[in-house]
Picture 1: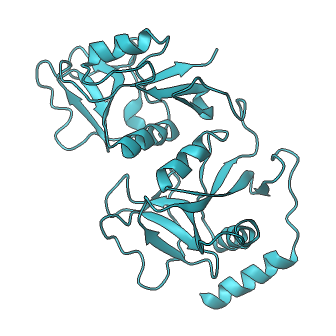
Picture 2 (picture 1 turned 90 degrees about the vertical axis):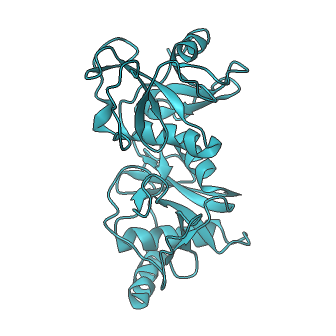
Picture 3 (picture 1 turned 90 degrees about the horizontal axis):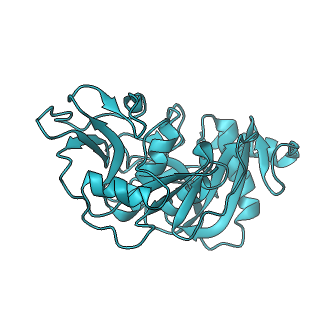
Length: 294
């Protein structure tokens, strides 16, 4: 493995990286993606949110040895003045305990674990790459490290929209998301949460892609709070979005164990690590709203 890393690194050190015209300046173009290298150290969740706000990207996912060597080689150029010797990539087991996944939803079909890794220990659920040799290690997600984002080379919506204070932009939905963005909104039931969002010209979020679900889960992980979704049922079988039309949210995530319970009164959906249905009069600590940009 070490020999392969050296050979691949040699190849990339001696072949110039040619940036395509559809990638922004100061990024690296590779396989229809643009890689951005952030030297400002931060925790895993904040790093992923930064990537989400950059054209709806994610922390980089790596699916072969060439990409691993390229990212490592470029990281040595961008992070050489940092004291850290490793950087965040998008592999984590936060979404599914003891199962490693990429935050962009692609399968983890390649790895370059260091000896004795992954540890699968509590608190070590996020992955870094060593600048020295390109090997991977599982680390404490709250540690501050530089990171690498990957975005599509041809975004559909603007790269960045300056949402109001308290809101975060997510490019794939061209929307802003905010937790308690209108001030105090603690301990709200589903109806009160929906009214709270409507007063902000927003709505409770519904799920229309795997990427959107992962973006919303980052709010879950950063605040350790569950949130109402704008999804409900009048019969315990058919689940509707804010527009009253049946929603396909189950294509992108799964129910928690025991849900849906189909118990009378439990007709509203919340999200934490997974979806669950609860009585609509249940109160949750915080309210997440989604505001589409016109």
